[in-house]
Amino acid sequence: MDSTVDVLSITAQQAFAIRKANFPNNITFHAPGLKHFSIDGFEQINKKAFLPISITGSGCALNCDHCDSHILDPMIPLNAKEGLYKMCKNFL
Ligand code: SF4
Image 1: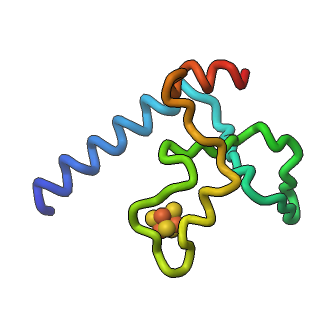
Image 2: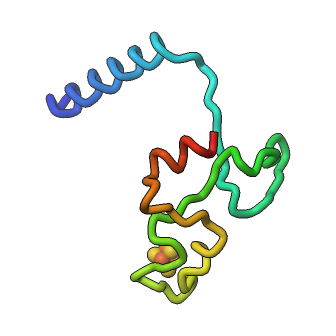
């Protein structure tokens, strides 16, 4: 077996062991709150659980044809004076 693969395999096993030793076997998934949706076994109940913040406000330098920056419209614009950390802390 290639020695590079061995090193990667050992590292992944060690990382998994550390994860198992320090975290429970539960995974919590969050879904962005831009649109309401529900599927079998999952429904977006708390719109504030995953707040979308745009660091560029409603502007995007790329303006892709399929989007034209519209996905940014419902996002909360970053308050540059306040800063991202303080802004997020205020949401709590
Ligand atoms: S998809 Fe929309 S927000 Fe993303 S880079 Fe393109 S225009 Fe900008």
